[in-house]
Length: 178
Image (cartoon, rainbow, N blue to C red; front, side):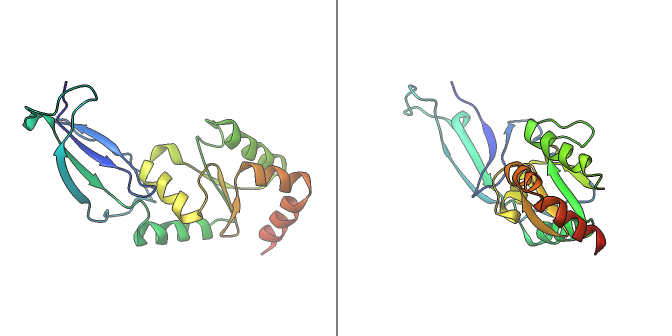
């Protein structure tokens, strides 16, 4: 059993998608945060087979093309810089503040709402390239990611701990007054 495909695979925390021959690859889009161009891909190809199937007699139908994209590029970095500095509090999360799609994201949303803090959210599930780029941008592997006054604050565990000890409230008050 073979599959002729074009793959875009991860290159150090990058995105991936699968494109079958003749099909269109699906890439998410995000409006104002979309970089205008991707870095040039690294391309290579070779013969691949499923485990247990002999490689001898491999044909063009077994050929797979692979492309790698760096998730974080200068354009995306600049766009993220502008976005996180244009709002006092930004939460990159799974889902939206009205419909969180993960318990950790919901926890941070509920904390921010309980503090009556205005905050912007961005659903990272809408764009895999942004999702991977944010991991590199913040040097933090998980979501949600909270930014306060243009600076990365932390994820859910750090936010919960800071909320419990009063540090979060103090930092948010300073941010709202600046």
